Amino acid sequence: MTGPVVHDVHTLPSDDNVHEYAFSVALDGQWFLQKGKMIAYYGRIDFHGIGYGPLDLLISRSFHSPLHAADWVVAEGRGKMLLADRAFDVNSYDLDEGNLTIRSGNLLAFQPSLSLKQSIIPGFLTLIGTGKFVAASNGPVVFVEPPIRVDPQALVGWADCPSPCHHYDHRYLRGFLGEVRARTGLGGASGEEHQFEFVGAGTVLLQSTEQLMPELATGATVTEEGVPGGGVPAPQSGSQPPQLPGGIGGLQRRFGL
Amino acid sequence: MRGPGALGLPRGAPADYGRGVAQFRLQGSKVLAVDMAGDAVKAKNGAMVAYDGRMTFKKKTGGGEGLRGLVTRRLTGEQMAVMEVTGKGTCYFADRASEINLVELRGEKLYVEASNLLCTDAALRTGTTFTGLRGAAQGNGLFTTTVEGRGQAAITSDGPAVVLRVTREYPLQVDPGAYVAHTGDLKQHFQSGVNLGTFLGEGSGEAFQIRFEGEGLVYVQPSERNTLGGDL
Image 1 (spheres, chains in turn purple, blue):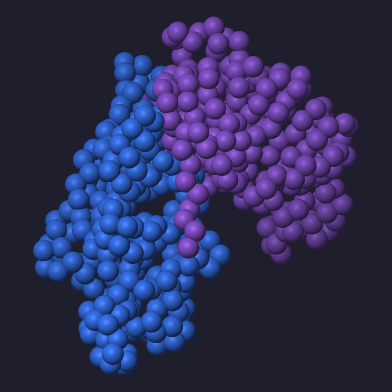
Image 2 (image 1 turned 30 degrees about the vertical axis):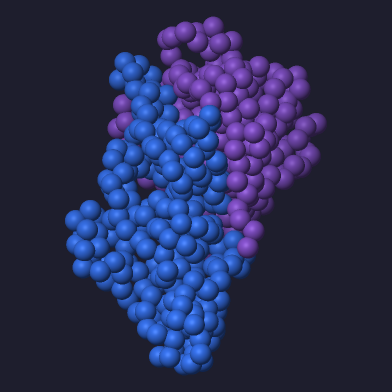
């Protein structure tokens, strides 16, 4: 019997996957990471919450999503750090003067040379700049080019596409059967009447499952005119504690409620 | 254990025939196949999924550790429902499609949660030990299971485990929710990064870690259980 592969601080890869489900970061400086995605580390690494503190400058440069502040931390120091997320596939991506929008629950970590912003699409985050980031997906990621229509649950994110929009199967909605089904819920639906549509140049990232990763409802947007989805709580999957309305939902979680 | 004669083995077989010869191998990554020739293994109750040959399954009370073990397990809450499988042929074990990791023990001690222990060679001794705050932080109770001796053991994890070596120069910090097991001569400290900020709502989410020092191996799973301190 050949024993399992044993890793130590020297044999762990630098900024690469250990296996499909774990990623090793060679930290020398700072990285942003989502809370609770670090599983182990060698060396001296401190974790700072995002808020007032010595990292003010860094945060003012690279972190522009106050709603997600409760979910992110800055890892600072030197060492090797292992990241993983619920045994989902983990991969790193490089952005070069680009932009990429990703479902907030799928993003695990990113270099501070990137800047994180809330997308105007609720529940998504946009990364802008140059650098590396790590994202999880349920099953391997498939890259496709627009024009394409994708299932909302299978969408992980997209890069450089300016026009993600909803697409409804109009003929189905208009048809007699569709009408009856839509109004009464009788007869069942195919479940494919609604897609996201992408056109233009860019890349769309899909995961090979329609099962959404249970995520913390970090995507709630502020109630304000002109903000899509404003005031409508993001759909929650899994059992989540009830959140306070408005943008202070994260506050509850900060106190561990 | 019964003698070799009772199992219909050749008369001239040595007294320790059938001890520790059970061969563990992985069938894929989620099924454990154990080839047995009249010897026995201890396995999690109900973990058998298939077998060929002749097998007998016997429920062992209290982890098969005798009266003292039974009482200890009851008291510590580190309950372990174990069966002893004896026979000739191949027996297949699996547990909720979780990944299985083989651990070869050469006299060292394996520390693992009872719920993550799938199968051990019958020659290995199991017991219960106090873990202190680490167990409490994992939400697994204050006690853990030890496996000791020479032979093979199979442990389960959520996603394939990463095996990390700890040396004196390079201690390792592990998130309590991702810890599965460890072997070797390791000291564990409970490390807390809780400061004023945690209570002001600026917790880092990584406030608690277990720090391993010494020489040994730590098994970490690419997934986190819900832990008491997980959100701080």
